[in-house]
Length: 241
Image (tube, rainbow, N blue to C red):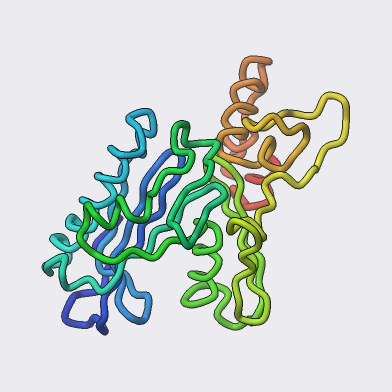
């Protein structure tokens, strides 16, 4: 990420916060001020195959990395926000089950990350946290209610109604990845074994699989053809691709 997008420390409004997003493919983290402006950003592969304890330790170290990049001590960070996929026990700080993170069932991720970073950690569903971020400082600032879809290794959803996150049971009240979008007998299946759901078609995992299948069948890319012809590569063209 370019440094031109980062806020100089001298302009930051304290307190400062670190946010960590645990995904099936990458761990993304940022240091922000009290107005949501970013001072530092870090990303690294999740490497879920190493197990939850290794990943929790690296997430904890990320807090110190962000602090060093911003020129502060980790103790200057008031709190750490942690967003993870899967159903959760928010009070106990547990990931109950994460389909894209094998071996994470009932893992006390909140307390383990806190132990490694030395700061208090607030735990949330990743898509709910993303929705609140858009509501706070993003494209949803003008609205009291919104729906957000997260498209990554899987498909997540966050809903805010009347300025309040819809948490639901186990923080899954806003999840929409398993909404059925294809009822045909040949519908695709998601990693959880559900037939015809949104995650089977719209996640990054599904899009890569569909692209490989199309290329193997001899398909050519309309994006490449449009670019070669000097045509505009529009959002509609990308969606159709």
